[in-house]
Length: 102
Image 1 (cartoon, one colour):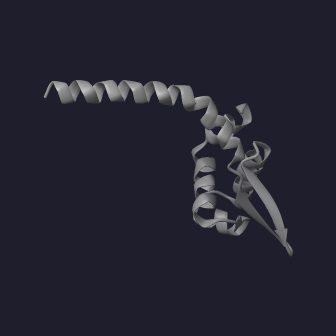
Image 2: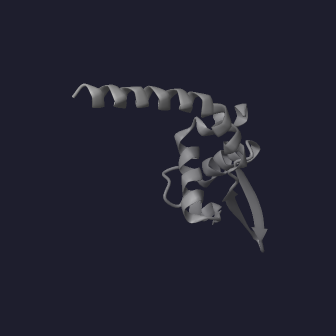
């Protein structure tokens, strides 16, 4: 899970994951085209995401396509669940207080 947090800490990598979520499988060219960084930098970001298990690669002919693997995010979601529940309880109490004291 530490590798996942490290990978998600960088905004460019979060943006790459968002693109893969929205657009599905993409080549390096497709991923790099809207970014103001080099293809080599995008390749390095993708390698970090791959090492964290967040991105997979599939070869199609001579081209590599990258796809999102959401499985490691499930572990993060499970880890965050107690904190989420605590905030939900606090917000519910706030809502009740505001409802009772207009």
